[in-house]
Image 1 (tube, rainbow, N blue to C red):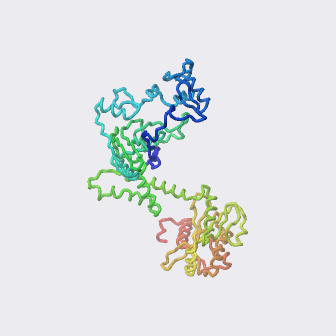
Image 2: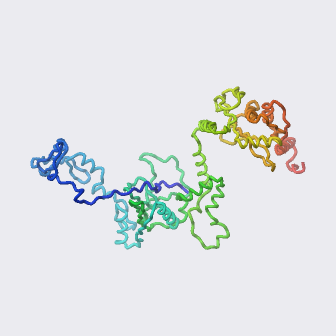
Amino acid sequence: MEKSDSEELSEEEFQPKLKVMKPTSSNVKPSTEQRVLKPSEIKCQFCSKVFSSSHNLSRHRLCCKQNPHKSSNISKFVCEVCSKTFSRSDHFNAHKKKPCSMTTKSEARTKCLHPKCEESFYHKSSLLEHLKCVHHDEIKEPISLQFSSVKDFVVWKDKEEEKTYSYFSQQGGKAKKRGTAYLYCQYDGSSKLHLKDGMSRKTKRKKHCGSIKTGNLCLAMMKVYRKSDNEISVVYYPSHTHPLDPTDFQRQPLSKATYDLIDQQLAWDVSPLKIKKNLENGAFERSNRENGDDVFRKNDFVSIKLIRERKRRKRYAKRLHKCDANSVKLLYESLKKEAHNPLLIYKPYLGKVLEGTPEAEEIPPDDLFMFGFQTKQQEELLKKGCSKILLIDETHGTNQYENYQLLTVMVPDDNNRCWPVAHLITSCSEATYVQFFFLSIKARCPDLDINCIMTDDAPNLINSVDLAWGKNHRHLLCLWHIDQIFQKNIHLQGVPRSLDSEI
């Protein structure tokens, strides 16, 4: 599913048209002869036109048609295209900006769809009339529709696009009339790349599904008008000049309703695979294959890659800053303002300790990074669970930065299920530095009674706790880690792997 380069339809594109007042006796201005001239106004002696300054009057006299003394060589500006003459440079410049009769004829680049016909047209409506009257093609008549709001129109548009496997959008660079929008079929348009003159493509890679625009012309379009009462009037031309293929769905953007559904399920932490199945709604299940319903829907072509990419963008949009160091500092400042400060220790990279116990100020401002936190609920759970056992786990490779570890402190509940009660993200897990994290926990819970501690075979974890509390705790090793170390050592001694189960 690719993102379309065309512009999406929005309510801002529709503005009420300006009302044109009919001339009445109350709003018609009096003529020049009837109204009294102001002191600053000057009247032309030949045609009786009124001007606000003598400069404008002098310029008018040079080209006044009723002036018998005007010069015959006054038309000194000549258009090279249509040979039209102008007496004023501003009129000539305005003419060059607009297409004159000769340029309009040269811009009629829309050729007739019949190969043997050499006619070309500037407006698509003229081409439609030509196909019906000259070639007698079966062109469907335009359909006029009325909608009470933009929302109702978008709902109808989504259903029509899904029924015809097509997509209508506004083409970039097209002039837009006030209160009017023109929506064209996705097949209509040039296959030329959207690059400035002289620029080349940065890569030669192409989309695996191919480009939807191949330089063809499609007659299907929508003329959308917004009235002053916010009602929507649509003139729909339903005739397509290309085969209607359901595989075109993979080249079209999803509807707003589908994106809202994906965002909602991502907020509920639903997996991308589950979201894809929910969008398909059982369309490819064996039980639905005998229903005889061969109608494809746009949601059937949603890929897991698209959902994962949307999830990644949503996650990155929540960052407080593009720079990770600044983002962490902004997070620290926001957490510190909360009623219960969850921060245990914070030492930024190449900076001094900003949060922690007085002993933590001894940490030198080198490349060490530490960020520890604990919520109020985790603190209460720690006080209850540490009387059984305190578990400390160290995880590597949690982010893109090398040598950063996530240290998690856990305790079991009444059902012997372990829950995290404190976290530390650090770039160095040596006991000399990790002890300051446990000192912050000890400062919050001075009466904490730890029965025993379970860790892996890394001695720095148990040593950091012993340094913080100033005594040796009963230490247990994790059974899984013991099994891993045992198997590794026996294989180093030459024991074959075929004997692992017996050992």
